[in-house]
Image (tube, rainbow over all chains, first blue to last red; front, side):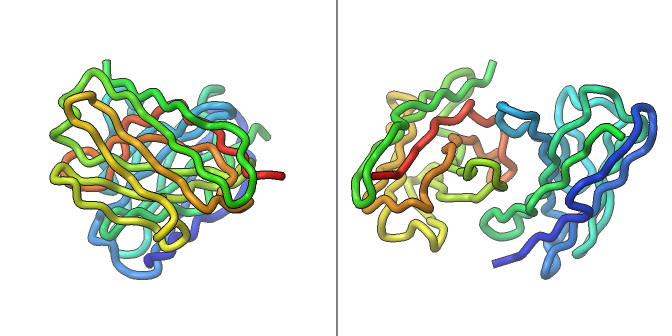
Amino acid sequence: EIVMTQSPATLSVSPGERATLSCRASQSVNGALAWYQQKPGQAPRLLISAASTRATGVPARFSGGGSGTEFTLTISSLQSEDFAVYYCQQYHHWPTFGQGTKVEIK
Amino acid sequence: ELQLVESGGGLVQPGGSLRLSCAASGFTFSNDNMHWVRQGIGKGLEWVSVIDTAGGTVYADSVKGRFTISRENDKNALYLQMNSLRGGDTAVYYCVRGVGRASVLDPWGQGTLVTVSS
């Protein structure tokens, strides 16, 4: 099983600031990395696949990067609707998720 | 609009059984792999199982031998039969489409809550 580790667990950011979330895989996932956003009481929503490809309708302020075992999700200018929990997921093998990063208002 | 709607959750005693259903619409159901993913209350996401377009199945070790995933393409329906339920199975269970042949998960249903307790 590929273990996914996200950091930090919680990120406190002011609206309008930049947020960078990290995700590390226990072995290379060959770019098969997705990011999801989950708001309280809602199902997760796909943001990014293939490490850097935004899903339909996802604002350009969300960007993904990285390769091999190290990946990042950057939100360039946080909006009020972006405060949520973010999960990374590898799909190089059967899916495994990171434990999540909560982005909260500072 | 792509939509997945789960049903069948509820309260069940340890050792009991429950069958979850998922109704799919807005896409060609038979062309896509389908997954179940669960989330313990206040916890992270855990992949449970997948069924591919040919009916092949894979399970997480935590549910292998106890859960059975199945599908009825003519009804656009996905199922999860859960037997020998344990407290650790308490979670919201999501039905999710796998995009293409990869396990990119989109969209997700709204989830159905399964509570295992005496």
